[in-house]
Amino acid sequence: MVRGRHDAAGGPVVVGADGSPSSDAALGVAFEAARLRGTGVLAIRAYVPAAVTALPYSVIETTERQLLEATVAGWKEKYPTVRLQTLLVNGRTAQVLVGATRTGQLVVVGSRGHGGFAGLLLGSVGQQLMHHAECPVLIVHGPAPADTGAHGDA
Image (tube, rainbow, N blue to C red; front, side, top):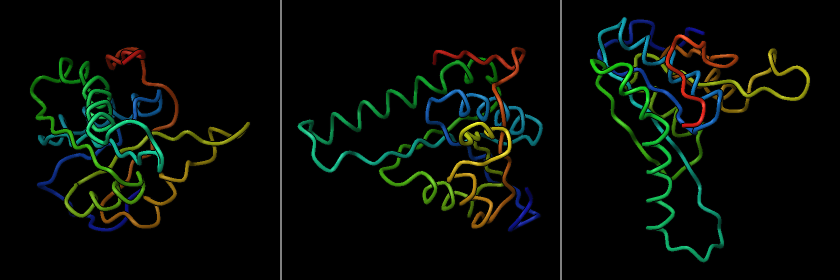
């Protein structure tokens, strides 16, 4: 979907990276888009810690950062010429990604869908991006193709 700044250039390709199969597919598309555009990838993992937890915030943040790094590890190897930045943010995913569209030239997310119509419906993050993004949005349906270097268990 193209909306917002149609001439968005100079910024990275932004991708939501939550470790799910749909985000793995989105990462493959984002890295390829960045390679073709001659830009980098900004992989973002947003999280909201439980209101009540026995774990210190620093432990939660360290765990989330490790999950983000594990999610992008195989892609850094497959696309060594694409500059990768990772960003861990304490916040709601949709709000964080919409904010990143102010400087990104493209935002890529996976679609989780709902029920038996998973191929037709968008998740709430995709819907928020469709309505509020300031740059083009690409919503990836389905698993990453085998030839993209997807690594499933990342």
